Structure formats: structure tokens, C-alpha cells
Length: 334
Ligand code: ASP
Picture 1 (cartoon, helix red, strand yellow):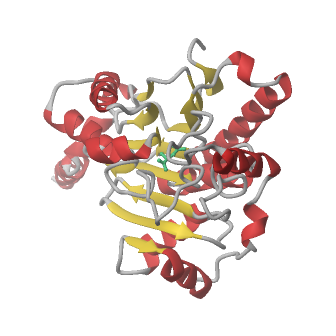
Picture 2 (picture 1 turned 180 degrees about the vertical axis):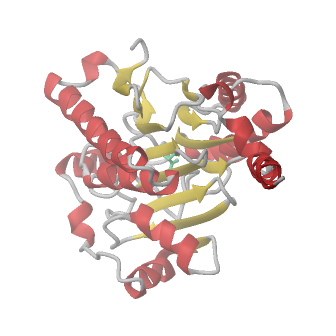
């Protein structure tokens, strides 16, 4: 009698969470996934020296290692995307953190966002100027403020109040970005952006062992940006989105078009409301954005374990990791 009661109780307990039981059916979903990007654009073999090529691959691999270490030990997707993006922010090869592009006036203003697929909490900043890791500032906005999006001086002030590491704006300056800025300013018409047609924004999306997804994006924006221009990266739904019901997305490219298309949210919506695979959803939305005149790329990971890239530029700095290993790539034909 007692044994029967215990059996019945065990049966009830085992059936109480059909959603999580379903997630692991057939053990098809990899234990965890991480995908990163370091920007898309006219990235071709003749445009990078062997040294630059090697340095970028090594930096991407370091970021993958940092995020993978979190996921491997059972940490959250949120922690993993933050860890990976911090590494890329520190690396001068990318347009984020140190090595970000110059504004029209010749300073650095960062944009960043982070989003948790569990409950769609999100945090973002635009025009932050002294925080070493803007992605971490975005996370503090999400976790320690009642808001989603802070700008400029207020974001800087919040960062200080949160005790985040502060650095002089010059810390973010690099000779290569200054050269690009000088070239930009010397042109007869300083109207057109993307001087090298190379976007160096960084981002990460991850799936953790619990089946949760998260996304993060960090950037300096576009060389010569002015009048307080804000790109897609920190705009929730444009350059960054995460929703456990669909996927996590981080974008890079001509921000104005990603905003108009609502790229990151649109990909998630297609996954929720159509029978598209992740690749189909991303390719379709990127094609629609391309039709508006924009170029760039996205990385996507789903709670089901799909991880994909989609880009309509010659190359995209990118990489992915799972328990099966890590890989990085730069050019379109890799
Ligand atoms: N999407 C970014 C922006 O428009 C630029 C980039 O991807 O590098 O601000």
C-alpha cells in the first residue's frame, strides 16, 4: 500500500514539468551553445594582413573560451554572453570598448544592450563614455534600475554609482580608428558613413544547460556619427533580442536599416508564428532588410539548440562553440 502510494507520488512528481521534459526528448538539444560575432562587412582576404587575420581569429577564440567556460560549468546564458562580449570589448581589433570608432567630434561614445530570454528583461545604454565594459553597464541597467534604456551623462552617472570600472575616454582610442576618423573628416562630403564598409560591432548569443537563451551587443556605432546618432545595437528588437519562446539574436551592420526592419525581433517573431527554421527566418528577414538597402549580419541561437549565422556582406567575424568544440571564421566562403 505504502509502496503503491510512493510510486504514484513519484509519477506525479515526474510529470509536473512537461515543458522541461519535452525539451530534452531524444537528447537532441546540445547541452549548451555559444555564437559570437565581431562585425560584418567588406571583409576579404586581400584586405587583411596575415597578422590581422591571425589576431582576429585568436581574439574570437578567446571570447568563445570565456563564454564556454561559463556554460560548461552550468552558468547562465546571460553570464556567458556578458563574459564573451567583455573580452571583445577589451580587444582593439573590434569596434566596441577599446578600439571603438570615433564620433564626428573625435571622441568615443558606446552603445550596448543585453537581454535575458527567460523573462525578456533587458538593459541598454547609448552614448556612454567612461565605462570600460559597456555590456556590463547595460546589464546593471537591467538588474539594478527600474529602466531598460539609459543615455549619455545619465548612463555615465549610473555607471559610477554602480561602482563599475571607469577609464578616461582616451583609453578607448586606437591609432587605426583615429586614422579612419581623419580620413572621414578629410572627405569633401562627410555625409556618407561606413568608411571601409566594415562594421566591427561585437555580439554574443547563448543557450545554457537550463535551456535559456540570452543576447548581448556592444559597439562604438559608425565612424563620424553625430547629432547623437544611435544605431540598432542598443535598441531592443533591432540589434538585440532574446526570448525563450523563439531565439536570441545579435546583429551587426548598417544600423538604420536594422532599426527600420526591426531585425532581431522580426526573426524571433517568424520563429514563433511560422514554421521557418532558424536559418530560414534569419535569411528571410535579412533579405527584407537588404531590400531596404541595408547590409550586415546576425547570429542566432534557439532553445532547441540551433545556432546559425546569416549575413549579406562578403565576410563576418564570427565563431561558435558547443561541447563538441569551437570554430571561428572570417570570410564568406569559410
Ligand atoms: N550596427 C552598428 C551601428 O549601426 C554598426 C556595426 O555593426 O558595426 O551602430
